[in-house]
Length: 435
Image (cartoon, rainbow, N blue to C red; front, side, top):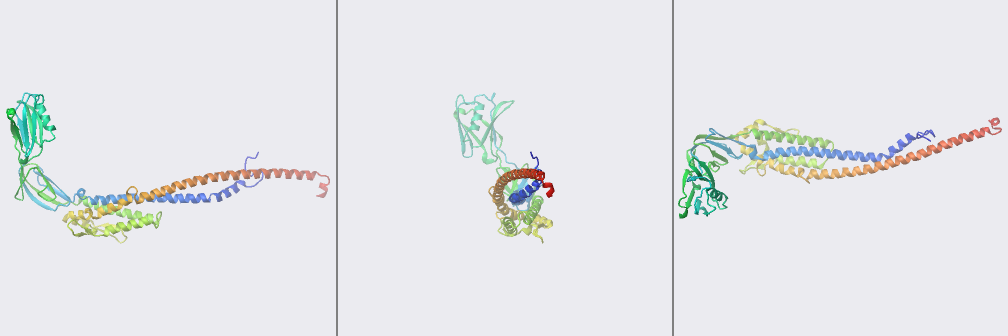
C-alpha cells in the first residue's frame, strides 16, 4: 500500500496538487480581499462616527447657554442675599437693602391634654384669601389628631399645613401657610357650636420689603425673579449688600476650546479616511462641506443683530483647520458674554445648528448606521460565500488527491508490469545474442 503520493510513480504529486489548488483558490482570494475591504470600511465608519460624536458633544455644550454660565453673579454679603443669573442677563451692579423678610403665617390652637383630646362638634372654616375649607367635626372624628389629618387630606385645602406640637402646656394644633406673604394670611372661623375652639397668632404674615438702588420693592416671597431681568434674588436676612453681574468666561472658553479641538479632530479623521479606506467617499465630502457652511454662516442673534464665528476668536487657518485666539475670546466674553453664548446657543446659533445637523449622522437609522448595516450585511454575505468556496475547495482537493493517488497507483503497477515484461524478454532464448 502506498503511503505517500508520488512514491510509486516518482511524480511530484504534492507539487502538482499545490499548483492546481492555487489556481482553484483565486476566487477565494478575491472574496477574502473584498471582505478585508468591507471590514476596513466598517472600521472607518466607526472611527468617523466617534469623531462626529465628539464634535456634536462640543457643539451641544456650546448650544446650552444656561449650562455655560456666561454671567457670574455675586453678592457682597451672602448672609443677606444670594443670586443667580441666566446666561443672557446683562452685566450690571445694584445696591440692595433688605428691610424685612417675607414670612409664612402661623397660628396655634389652645393647649389640650393630648392629641386625642376632643375639640368639639360643629363646623370650622379655614380660609386664605377667597379660598375656604369647611370642615364638619362630628362625634368620633373630632379629636385634635383627626382635625389635623382632615386639614392635610382635604382636596380643597386652601394652602394650610397642620401639625401638632407637644409642649409643657400640652398639645397644640399648629396651622402654617404653605406660602409666605401677607396675601396668604390664615383665617380660622368656628361656628357657634365650636365657639370654644380658638387660635392665636404665632408668626404674622408679612411681605418681603427691600430696596434696589433706593427704590422700594414689596414681594410675597423671599425668592424674587421679576425685579432684575434675568436675575433671581434670594433674600436671606436683613441688611445691605451689593449684587454684581460680570462676564464669566471660564466655562465658555473651555467649551469653545473643546469645540475647536473636536472640529480639527473630525477634519483630520475625514482627511485620513479620505486618503485611504473612504477615498472619494461622498458622505465624507458632504459632511465636511456642510459643517463648514454652518461654521461660516452668519447667525441672527436674540437682539436681531448678526453674529459671526470670528467674534469668539475662532477662524480658519491656511490649511483649513480652526484656530482660537484666546485673547479675543476673553475680551469678547468679558465685554458681552451673552452675545457669545447667543452666537452658539440661539435658535439658529452655530452650536444648535451643528448639533441638529450632526444628529442625522449619529441617530439610529441615520446615515452612518444605515451604511454600517449595509456593510455588515455585505460582510455576512461574503462570509457565506467564503464558507461555500472553502467547502468546494476542500472537496476539490480531496478529489484531486483521490485521482492522483489512483494515477500514482496505476503508474506504479504499470512500472512493475513493465519491469516484469522486460525481465521475461531478457530470459527468452537468443535474447542475449541479439543484444
